[in-house]
Length: 160
Image 1 (cartoon, rainbow, N blue to C red):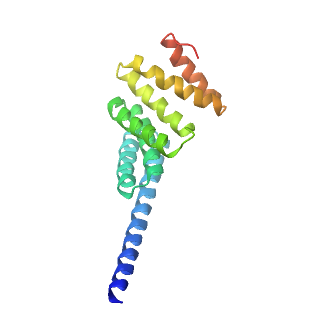
Image 2 (cartoon, helix red, strand yellow):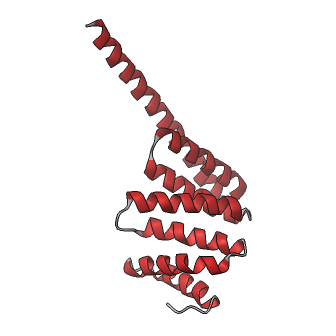
Image 3 (cartoon, one colour):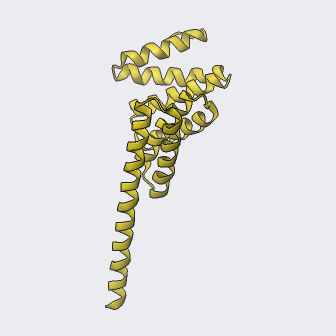
């Protein structure tokens, strides 16, 4: 009987700890969004990367992908394409795993991978990412996404 009580107690402590960590994650994300909205992209990048590490620790795949995608965007804004590329590629991998239909989140991550590769003079390697993102944006009726992809694809002599 006492052992069962200890196990229940440990689960309760684990649940409280997880809840507190999740609350901390939400707090960091809120600060990251605020920094991004006020164009403090350096602070946003740091906060989104910090949030990604918390999400990774908590094994929250959706939150991890979200924070990585936004860390990539913020990193591009401060001209850190290498860090952006790593975050965007990981976000795309996670979205591919958790969103079987390859939705808009996946397309946005691919877009960031492509932008980072272009900034790293790897433009030819970005074409497949632009093409796949374009297909997804088209399926979901996101005209601005299609237009951006078309512009990048045409700069590499590719047609939609």
